[in-house]
Image (cartoon, rainbow, N blue to C red; front, side, top):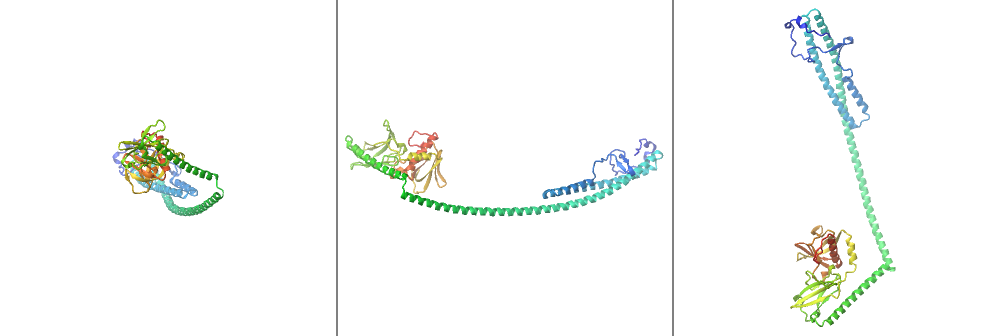
Length: 492
């Protein structure tokens, strides 16, 4: 295209050229025509057009081909997602087509105004300038024809895009419907599978329950048969172990009888030799001098004063050196030896009307048979339980005889009733645990526990062995915790 030279304004009067309308919008901000070139068949070609850029029709066709190709290998959910993206792309292309249509209409208006301006300019110039104006008018007309052709193509592309958008929209709806159907089918299959699994589990539980019941019944029957067989064997062929147990039991009974007889003879001998002190013949100590029994001060003369009018105090006497040690709280006529007294003699002092009467055991307190092995077996446990009855709490008698549980652990002691904890204390120098001072015939089965300041209980055990084992365990665990006390009446 031939440019209009700057000298053109010198040959034509400026006021003779009509002004261009103000509503004309030029595509470029410069004051010249766009750089076009004429190709074959008089087609105007934009010099800046990139031949590598695909048209909208080609882009839509390629995307459609890709979608159709991937439809066979995509899952239902992925296919629905692809259709959604394709629908969005079609909507975007439709918007771009609308913008292009608006831009095309604007170009038509611009070309019309430009042609009118050139026509008005044609009658006012002459010579070479007129030829340039005629050539410019021809280019504008060719450009208008090209624009019309492109508008036709744009309309056709718009129809195809609309058709593709409708197709994608319908495909998206079908895909959503298919997804919902597949999801409903999958949920139904899952529910069926869960119901089947539940039925199988119930059947297995029922089978296991029946198997356990049958196995338990068979085991009980088998145990009964084994016990019956053992009983028959024992009746017809006693074992050597049973013979030894019977022999040991008989020897223990004989030993106890001889020990009691020997003790009576020693007391009679001491009474016959007690010429110098006639007061010592008024009372005597009655009971076995072994752990698990109790000693009672018994009057042996009609002129002996009543013990309720006397002052009584029990002592421990060491076998080496004869060191006498006061037993705190032991001021009753009955005293049950505890594990701390084993290997020592016991002495009771009776004071009446300023006169002192001393009663001493014939020898050291003997240990209970089998107690040491029993305690060693319990030490291996972390926590040992004893069934007890609370007879006193803080010095007040308890009328209820409900069963409590005393826990003797490696770190602490606890007394509970059912699941309710009554006392729970760690071993400390303030804790005391010893046998009951007094208490009559049940003294050998009871102990006194001062858990903490302001709380004390008297507990009755099922047997003398459990009472002594609880005392020995508590002192053993307290020693392992490096807790000690100078008082022999304390477990710590």
